[in-house]
Amino acid sequence: MTGIPSLPPRDGSFFKNVLTSAGMRALAALILVLVLGALFNAHGTFFKAATHRDALRQASVYGILACGMTLVIIGAGIDLAVGSVLALTAVATAKMAIHWSWSPWLVIPAALLVGAGCGLTSGVITARFKVQPFIATLAVMVFARGLAKYCSSAAGQQFAGGMKVSTAVPQPDGTYQYVDIPGLFRAIDSRVFGQNVSVVTLIFLGCAAATYLALARHRWGRYLYAIGGNEAAARLSGVPVVAAKIASYVACGLFSAVAGICQAAQEQQGDPEAGVGYELIAIAMVVIGGTSLMGGRGGMGLTFLGVLTIGYLEKILSINAVPEAARLMLTGVVIVIAVLSQQRRET
Image (spheres, rainbow, N blue to C red):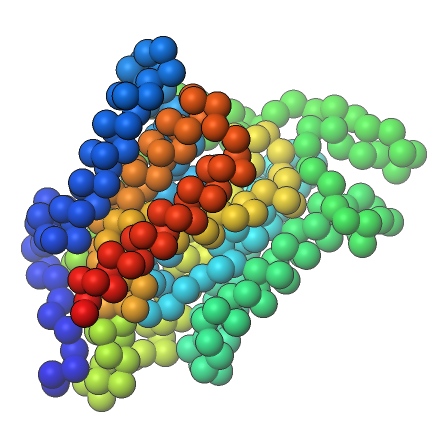
């Protein structure tokens, strides 16, 4: 069937992906950002090991979201709900771990189930009922954000707008009882290897490795490439299109849940307002890496370069005291440039 694009070989490696034209462009973008960091080094701050450690730590939550976004975009979809699902999961995690004192062996599976449920909802609406991914995930985004605010509200004030779920536990008489930070949060927010690597960074690397293996070595990954290249041809070739697309959204929801758990641990609270705009950053990381928004091309190796590029760009702007508004505007400009670069390559 001529409509199915050429797929990456099962023995493909990260370095083979990087050596493609898209990979070379992504690598060039990363090098450019590092050069800018060396030039605008904030009086030598950029050259300190702690700066790079913190840059990787701060980019890790975004990178986890980018793992799921890579799967969805390769299948010619999009998921705008990842930031809201992160917030919902962070609130649920904080409720279970702080307020209800659940064991981590219950908190983590329950939080993952919340994320998977949101992803399943997006996938079913998109793949089974043929609703445009933009509209379907926009609806889930709004619903998940509202649910996060509802769940975080104090008893009797469920529609008051929500509040942060912290170690200050509200009591029936209106007072607050302060409790200890859960051991789960301390473990995730810790550093290992001589305090040089954050646990959150290791979690991101594990998610990236799982995504890479799914795309490069598993049949499901090859299904997603085929669907993104030509969905009609993939269906005629026997690819279970609906099941594969739903699975990609479920996986994206799971990664969003992992990011939400990490976010709650880092902030030591569940904030229903967390994750606003995170979907923009995750999409930017995927696109800058070279994955086509039209689907069918890209990979986790390229997304990894995009994560490093955006992560270091954010850190360089931060150490040089660039306002957040300017950072957001610059991220938007970078996305447009990356998309225009893709269009020139595809024409």
